[in-house]
Length: 447
Ligand code: ZN
Image (cartoon, rainbow, N blue to C red; front, side, top):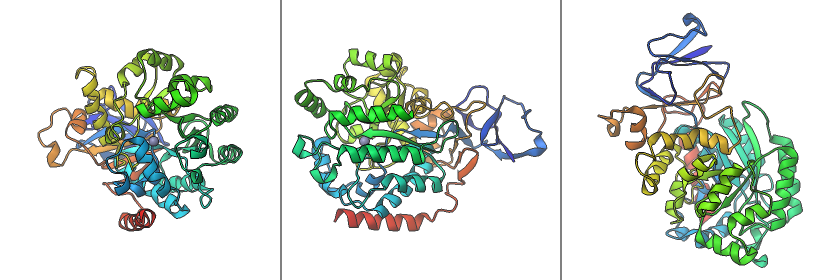
């Protein structure tokens, strides 16, 4: 049955004061002010009264490490910048088990869904011997949860013995990485509109992957038309590493391995020169801004508006839960707004710009044109927030209130026309048991 999300309190769409009609998993109609739907007879519509809700396109998270929900606020990693933080965590992460991947994926997706997220990209790059099928587990878990995912087959091939950062026990040889990448693309990658599981290739970072693997991953991705992802320009330590190891700044290194192209999106993208921002924009490279993580690790502030102006899609990511340490996407939009105000004038870094990152910008990073906007023909991925908590009392502009008053929990979320969150609950999920089991595995992993 078609659904009319009727007369919302606020909506992130033009000429839709009367709401939206959802039919066959898509947005069938935007209803103007004072109007009723014309695409479907009113008698055939299920009506959801949204007069107390603010309606957004389902939010899109473009960088995460789901497994890190098991190492939040982890004592050995507290109060450290990126490189020492990674060195404290690598040996712990090397002990991940299949059950840990399953439950951390389920928990992270539940947490994202509760915060209005309908599509999430994950970057998984740890494949210890006991865990050859981490991405398979993630794909199956995501299908059960009903969110869209871009699962990136991450990789590390440059261990300490080759001058890299990660311990040798966490890296794989290139042949194994490429074979498994090809297997995963063939098995799981869906193309076209309404895709639920997509695969991308994601060598982890310049300091954990060989030059050859950067090049061969790009060749393989282009053979199958899948996207490429990596961490880049996150810290000054990384810039120093690239200059010492390759004699190049991170962006020049990226270009030298054939990655300065529009099928690439990068996590962080902080430490670029003005001239480098122009090159990124011209090439159409996407940037995933991760404000909380960048603040937690004292990494710096991404030059979001300049990247957007140069032509890059700029999306949003919560990043892994060891450097955020939550997976709350609507709170991340607030963080993007606030940190953006430290770099740009308030009238340029507006609440609408912040929403744009988590919707259209993120869709651009993932190479998708079927999600991220409330327009006729787009997928019915929708998040509804209620302004009924004390923090919102007295608020004027409903959209601005979500960010300025600190919304943290969606009320209803729909993915491809199906309700995946209803009245703040995920149907079919026993949250108490999930938290109990997940936290018990976290204790097992860290101690
Ligand atoms: Zn990351």
